[in-house]
Amino acid sequence: MDGTAFLFPGQGAQFVGMARDLIGQDERTRRFLSAAEGRLQMPLGELMLQGPEAALQATENAQPAIVFHSLALLGHLDDRGLAPAAVAGHSLGELAGLVAAGGLSPLDALAAAQVRGRTMAAAASAQTGMAAVLGLDDGTVERLCAESGGAVVAANYNAPGQVVISGTDAGIRAIEPLLLAAGARRVVRLPVSAAFHSPLMASAAEAFGQAWQQIPLEPLAVPQVFNTDARVHASPAEVRPLLARQLTGPVRWTASIERLAALGVRTFVEIGPKRTLTGLVQKILPKAAVANVEDLPSLRAFVTAHA
Image (tube, rainbow, N blue to C red; front, side, top):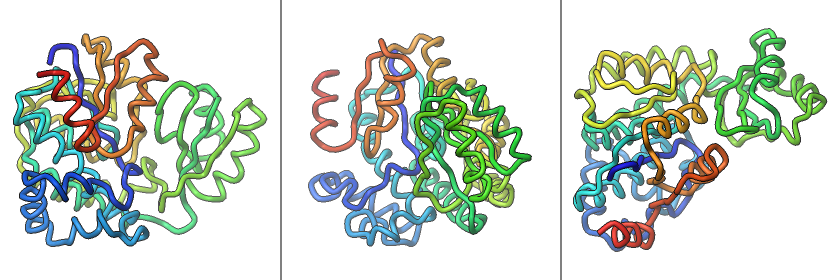
């Protein structure tokens, strides 16, 4: 699909009932679920469909659930010969992206998501978290974070005027009035269990990096833009450290979308639960064409439109 990029969401896209129609009505997805549960040794389908919500929200469960949902949809597109010209994933979504780019098998991507979630859960510290800063430019957010003495860092550059910060609870409380005084419209605490994409995830990056080395990874056949530096990388030797570094560094999503546009991408298709990335692309590139594939109706509509 010339000029089309596939985008894959990260943690936060999960919800109880996700992939319900795929699991309930689609034989291909049920076969994939059976293989996934065997590989991961966890009741993935039950968690996705029934929860409880607290269990699904847990990082170690949410990550394989999101990747499974994206890959179940991607499999149908692949079966129909609908392949992207380029790929990107937001944080965790880079693992599904690696499948679309030809570097990972679906089951290996799920195994990587599981160990990533477990290592991040183990590294989670009490009294840490994240907050979205709305309506303030990146430079001002960075300056105020730098003045926090390391207590808070910029974690996600999601779109112009939307930066997520990460750090200690005390640091976030201290920086909030400064951000508002500098012109931020709002500072919204996020329902996450830790300071992801910050130096506080160093132990997770080390543990995930060691496990990640054991998962087969092939050279990428499709250009993938990575969060860490918003550049294309293809060789396993380059890609492996990027996935580990991502846990302690920021997600450069705005720059990644701009990079895809510079590569000739004009249509951005979000594949997976919810439509968060679709909205971000519209803020970054208001004139870009967007679409999303999140369930059987949207899958059928997309396939029909590109038959």
